[in-house]
Image 1 (tube, helix red, strand yellow):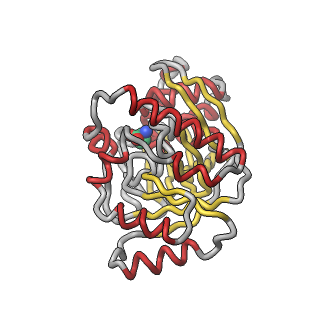
Image 2 (cartoon, helix red, strand yellow):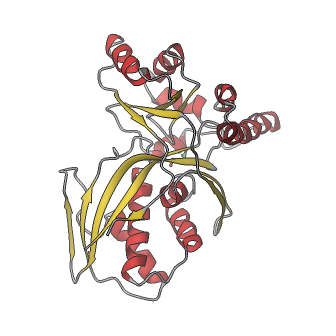
Image 3 (tube, protein in one colour):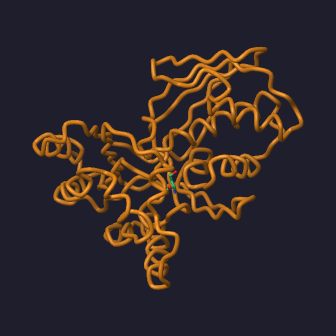
Length: 296
Ligand code: HSE
């Protein structure tokens, strides 16, 4: 059995819709071995599809097909720490596990670029899959076939604090609420902020982040699908967050705080409880610079 560690990811980072994402030190684990049958189990009890509809299996099968091989079965043991349908890249983690694992089983015929492309083709956009594979913060353009990407490792003194509610928001629903067209002015609003985000993160100009995470492409529409999100944003800013944004398609709200703001997560927990938002979990995370790794 091979064992893989795959990071959670936070996509969009405010204005970088479908273009920016980063990996977090919050991991799923997958053990994998080729088999004549499909044998899928969940080590932690999280319900997962145990047949050919399993996303890890689908991605592995796709990779075999690309390599001209037929996958007859797979033994998988999944440990799912990343909560599903919460905006933290759980489906991308499965796709990446399937691709990296299957590539390894075949003796690594595909290169890293091929895996980044294939993962985006399966997911439809690259902003979770690319950082799940590569780690760090990834800027990516998907032209429908290939991903043109840059990975940058991040060594900031920042904490990414995820406020994860106890309800799901499916990406399809969160994409269906978006407008089909926006004005030229709004396009400029977003592209300038997306560019500002990564430049500010990487150069330590953290005071720019609050401006950089504002956008007109998705967050104003998705806020309506996430009860109490506005309150969570307000509480995060009241406790000194540099920025807060909807992680991926939501419903998780991500706050970026300084490492020296060491009680930020505890204050969030306390304030959320006081506001009656007991269903929201708080996770204090750091950026992962490694991406998906083979542990053995
Ligand atoms: N960029 C994607 C979105 C990420 O916001 O819909 C979620 O898959």
